Length: 249
Image 1 (cartoon, rainbow, N blue to C red):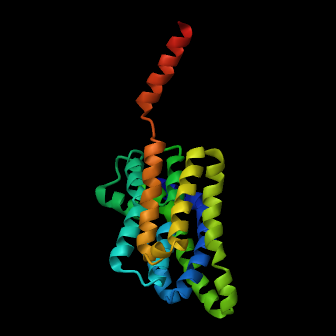
Image 2: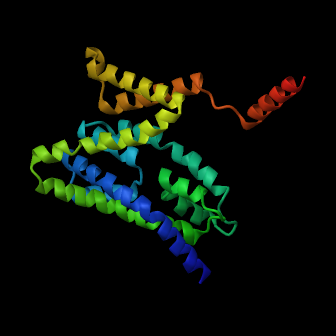
Image 3: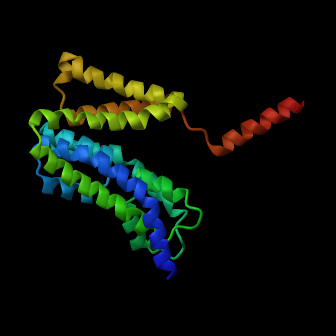
């Protein structure tokens, strides 16, 4: 009875995520169709790869005729953050969760699911996490499939125009954070700068899409790590204590 209740709570918490995923993956389905994939192929890709940015980048590499090496490296770099999030999530999991259950939870650990799970007031049980992840997985997969189907029924000019939803999604993700964080704004601008070089500089324009995405991502991330290093909590505490002592003196 308790487990069933935990599952229901998880499902309820996952409803907003599922609705958002459905809307975003609808445009992903259209992008997949334009890249030469079928609705079924798109659905299989989405149900086995729960990563918005990763899938969009992957579809772009596929559409550009990139190699498997480019595709693998692109996914590795873009999705590396999930390893860190999963490690952090294990600290809040119930002690009864086994290794195999942790691996199952890790498969469905996305940015939004991670955020909701970390804000959950109690320890995370397997039923709660399965409930939290179930609807978002369905929404992401269904949205991809229906987007590809709808894209096939719409005039090509309309389906191509709807690809702008992808850029709208990234703008909606970056702009609110960039308005509050100067480092995020600068790092995003650096990524845009490098991406523009690959688009407009003649000899760089010949570099494949997959490689250019990898270079831009690594370059921007490296710049951010060097210029805006994250301070350790102990360092911040020492700084605060030093400041107080200095003020008292």
